[in-house]
Image (cartoon, rainbow, N blue to C red; front, side, top):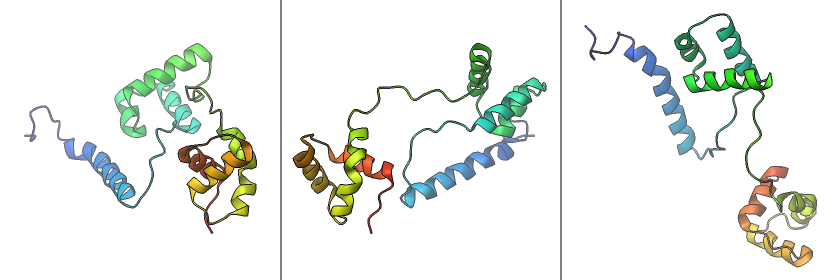
Length: 150
């Protein structure tokens, strides 16, 4: 008899990957890993999920095998039906107004003052270009061009 009345005896087998993922996630959090937000599933995974649906696999099998939700499968099917493709949708929201401008001239500023603080870069940018930039915007631009302190 199963521990839970609704359990079919696979409770621990099904919960093991989730527990493993939680442990890995906790390790990344404790070691300073930064969450980059939700990322789109790869195109390869999307195609394999749809191929499994087309081959007649049950939704439960697909969910267990690929570790995707039922809603994800429905969304892929709807998107393929409506657009003919399952490419990731663009991120909503307006594009940044300042980041592109800051990234254009940032490399010179960083090379001229390699050990400065982010707030100093913001001040120098405002002095040289007449555009006030927050430390968050400056930090994101530095990260986006791949700048690391030496």
